[in-house]
Every structure is written in C-alpha cells, then in structure tokens.
Image (cartoon, rainbow, N blue to C red; front, side, top):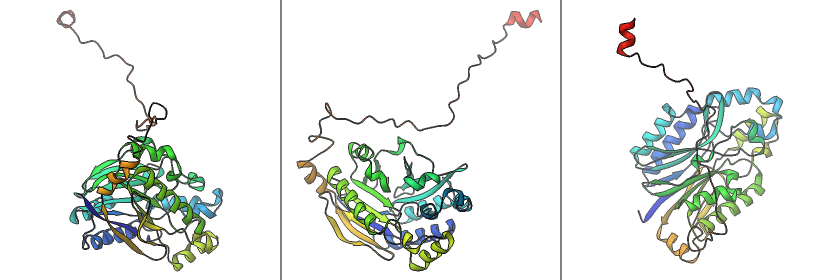
Length: 325
C-alpha cells in the first residue's frame, strides 16, 4: 500500500469488565471498517482497564484491586482475542491494542497486533513497568522489540514511557518500522503528561521517519467519580492525560488531536513521505555511524525454566544379553 487510512482510537473501557470492554472494542472495529479504515490503534491496557488504583492507593491496600484485575485480564489465546481477531478479519483491518495479559498468576502490560486476516502477528510485553505499575505488572523481554510486516506496512509498537527509552525506540528504528503504534493510558498525569506525550511521539516520528499513531483511553466524568469513590483518591488523579493523535515523518501533527471525549483521529498516511524524510536523515542508514555507535539487543525470549536432561539413556540390550538371560 502507498496510502493507508488509519485511526487512532480514544475509547472508554467498561470498568471492571473484560467482556464489556472487548465488546466495545469489537463494535468500534466494525464501525471503523465501515469507514474504510485499514489500521487502528487502541489505548494501553484498555482491556479490561488500566490499573488506575495503583496510582493513588498504597501497596498494602491494593490486594483486592489486583485480584480483581487478575480475574478480568486476558489470556492469549482466548475467546476475547479470537473475537478481536475475527473483527479484524471481517473488516480487513490491522489492529494494535493494549491489554492486561494474564499468564499464570502474573499480569503483563501487553500489546497485541492482529493482521488484516485476523492472524496474531505479535504479542509483546512492556519491558519495564513505570513507577507505580511495578506493583501490578511483570517485566517483559526484548523478543517483541522488533517491527513486523503487515498488510499495511511494517509496524512497531511501544507502550507509554517506553517512548522515553531511546534504545528501545532505536531497536524499532533499526528494524525499519514505517508505522509506529503508540499507546498511553489516558486519565493520568493531567496536562503535564499531555505535554510530555506530545514531545515524545513527535520526536519519535522525526527520528524514525515513520508515522506515529497514538491512542489514549477516555474516562468520562462518571467513571472518574467512580474511581475516586472506589480508591479514595481525588477525581483530579483520573483527569487529563488525553492526547490521541497522528504524527507524520516530519514530526507534524496530522489533523486535530483528540483531547476529550470518545472518538478517533482518522488520517490518510502517504508512505512515500517516509523516503522523502529519510533522504535527508535516515538514522538507520546514511545518517548513522555504526562503527562509532550501535545497539546490542538480546531478543531471546525470557523463560523461568531451562531444562536439560542430564541422565544418559539406558543402553539397549544386545542379542547376547537376551540369550544370556
């Protein structure tokens, strides 16, 4: 494809409900499909919801919240991932979405990338949860720090403050991403967070010469008030932080960012702009100096079990042994 119609989606979760949130996501994919969108990015851990409780409650007080989130988190594969995959297939749409992924007794901040035929192309976990998130999520590994070929181009994914990690971003730049799926939680950090987010995604677009499609979640006033009641925190802790936007390879914002309410930013991306930008500054090519500066990355999937069979197999009996018996 030369021109790709994309959507950065600002959507509300159904608080405390995996099934309800997945249903909303599937309905939105069908809605975007009717408008000929070919690539959609949904917010960070929107399924079932971001762990806002960990932002305001002390560690000793979050046990019940953690267990509820664990119960509502997504396993991969599952009926929920199958539903999203099927919606992507029916609409011939590539979909990037953030989920809380349950693996045993641990939750991970995971990004799922589905191709236009419904194939799950990538399941990557945030490599280092940020600050309060470390009480909730496990750490990912570098196996997902790669760009993936899809029906709409070569896609890389990062979540939230991973955009503040230059080497993580460069891993995707060096892998030749064309479209970058960025996702943040929304309803967190107020306007300071918005300012930082905008700087981060525009800087990545400039450095990578890729398009950035960035999605944040929306919480309406009733949801914010509910979280304030449930956590004992101030409503202001769950307000602001909304900046759903599309950025081109020159670092320019395409269209009008969405700063409040549900909706989406839809844009046509002309992939020819990537070559125009890289003609002047290709940070993985002519504008790099690998003999001076380079990145070493270990993409080996991390595992808690490394089994080695140290017992030699029993020798096979010979004919002489059998007759001797």
